[in-house]
Picture 1: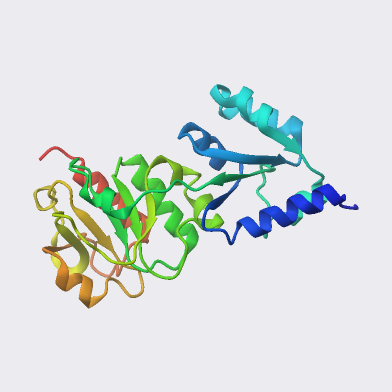
Picture 2 (picture 1 turned 45 degrees about the horizontal axis):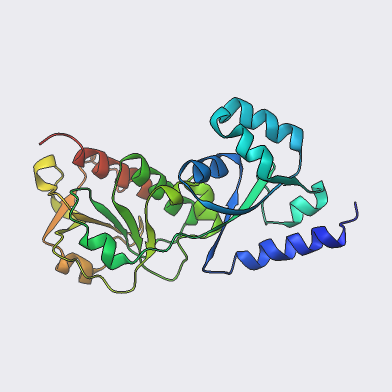
Length: 251
């Protein structure tokens, strides 16, 4: 099937957006649904099947049905498949502006909710799952170090669009602004609610490497998730979920 000149321009625009630090590519209906519910600034929505999009909106997000149908524009199946490396089964993709927030403002916020710090995560889908958990647990935000963009399209797919529900920020230098830093590390004391203070920065490393020695040294405490003997680690998003929801248990 031939792609029209206007569709080729749309494909090029979406491909460029993947490298733009000011934009976010939102793949799939569930991600778009959450982005809209949390006031994302949507620039463009494309769909491969308008009738299917209407069915999905009516079934899964009736509160957003009118909005979705008003902003979505149809595109040929061939052009849609060219928009991204792995087209979502729900047949919809969008562009949005990334929210801009200063990490210092997030860390200086006096509210008691914890901040999640992910040190050099490598799997974008798992990173997105951590953000999804953090949004569900009402964390204050997610800070990410390392070379991978936390707003990568795969991460947004993994979070189901919940990047827009809380600040998700790339961090170069950690200034705690009076927050206690809690390292999650197997060498730490067993996790318990009383060891999770208000406003904590909860630091997680990767499954393979864990946290760096420098970050563990900087922490005011190290905690370990109790596990059955012989089980070496948990998935990163699972670890984040365990600790965040433990922090929500009344002390």
